[in-house]
Length: 515
Picture (tube, rainbow, N blue to C red):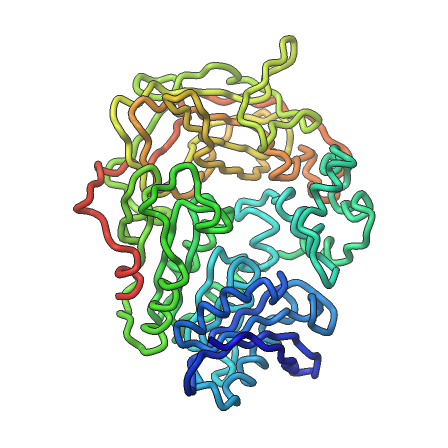
């Protein structure tokens, strides 16, 4: 097997882009896999060799301004043009048969997807996008408004405005200054980190969503979207697959985190240990050969079971669920309120995203509304979008409403199932009806499991604290408490309950994405 060798490919403006190339043994020409990444091309040596073993020429390229490549690193700025120049270069090589698969995970998936709107000569013939970070706006804020503080602070500290990476940069800074993320304003984070981050303010000014997905009304490029039910970009992965129109679209969704099979959830089964490399290669061959059916297909793992289900079994937002469960607050068969139908969302003491234990502070106002359900009498399969419907009141002109659903297992352990947050600007002290989407669930809960639901005003540090003044949380320096009321008789947890699922409902994920 040929080992990789370095090449330098010029970007359209002449900037040299450091690239590693691995060719298969035997005569060509070969189809090509292109991975463009800010995370160091040298970390992809094993991946390149794997593609080559399957008969693909494989390239890993540092994006502009990163590691071995020239130029200045500006996230989300140059990827379409620089990637298009690389595709043209590949197609001019004697070892290339002209067919190109653009592949990548996280930011590298953005690099791959950005090429689908390039001109014909620079457009790839297929795209493999895993846990896609679609664009700056999508990664910076939830679709409902709140800022993803901890994740963006960690990414920018590790990778932003520097040619190399320091994955432990934020953890090291927090070890020195545990209150670093508490400091205001959020816009001044570079000052607390102690190094320049000139692109940090622009991240929060990004407002254009769907920079890739849906840019073209129809596409001719087949897609494989890969994601995890524990990945923060799960909703983006599903939306990308559902909106891909005009070419075969396949979905592979497992009980994984952002690192996919390297980060299995506690609900992962040994049947979910999919060998992704051979599966990707098999799909790529069929996609490049034009042997995929046009109907969107895929496979979704049902966490907590050994089952893989067809992707279309997972209803999208707004779809009818055959047997939705409405667990009303303080109603028979619903959720019982333990504390806090009246609570205070105090940004000085926010409900924390990194703690599942509910603290007790005698003498202080409750910091959340806490509800719990009865033990499940039998296993429960959840498949589809969950949400919380609230009638609620805030005494401030701006308010975030957070809903966190937790499974209390019979073993005594607690596990987060889903979290949603929405930003509202309702009339103070006037009840408002609102819905907090919890996102998609694909999960089997064991008999005896109890559901705990928390309604709060903050989810920090995963999300920036709402100052309750109407000021942008990125720029705010003054925080005010917000007194809240949840009206039990008009509020409920909405769960996408499926009929009990069995092996007769199951599919083989490799067969399903290659049909």
